Length: 93
Image 1 (cartoon, rainbow, N blue to C red):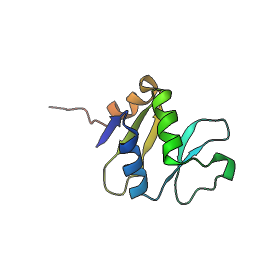
Image 2: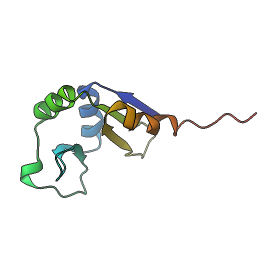
Image 3: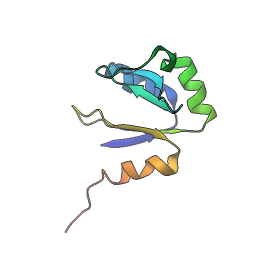
Image 4: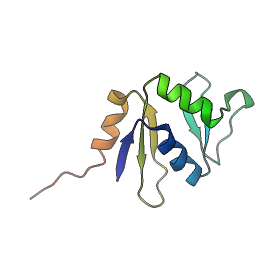
């Protein structure tokens, strides 16, 4: 099941559980660097820096709690909310 949050502490708990670290993409967007991904020293952030930017930019985090899933998205809520609704199966009577 997918969820949406504006709480950076939820992002941190989810990421740390999967070995991910806060980072900036080459084009300056907040992201999570998963254990198998390379990222430059310039792109590294502390969790405090991440939380400050995440909150200041009023971003949302969509994440999946299905065992084995590492799905996530960070961005403005109107851009990431569709990832939550598309994960909800339609009820077919």
